[in-house]
Length: 159
Image (cartoon, rainbow, N blue to C red; front, side):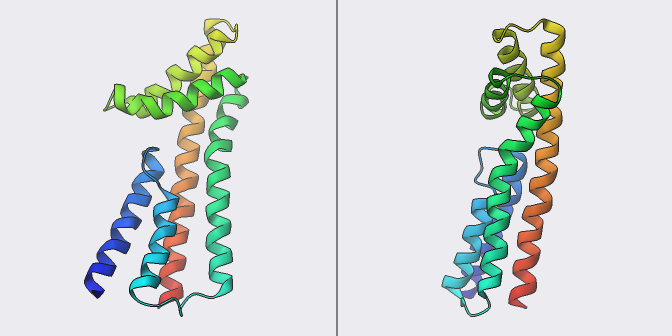
């Protein structure tokens, strides 16, 4: 059972880290779930109240940052709410429509179309589309760093 427990914990960590890049995967939720799986298979004794406070704060920050950093990229270059919505839709749909490059092209096209629908000229719409890609890359970096911190804190706490 110990081996199965570690396989599930590690698999959830891997899914969580992949979720930092691919938005359809549960990301931080998988990492948070791995903490419980470890407790169920082994013990919750290693975890203190401070451990749960730190991990939960990181989880909350990641949920907020995931949306806020992407929206920041669009807003930074003058985007409207329509372009933020378009970027978000493009981020979700893009990888399915264009498997190899949809993660980058989807948010760009979504923000571009959203900005055109909001009445902006094509030049500004391209600029906002680039802002959505900047926001996406910034969001990925933030997620990778904070999710790695969750995993490192987990290992420090249990050993």
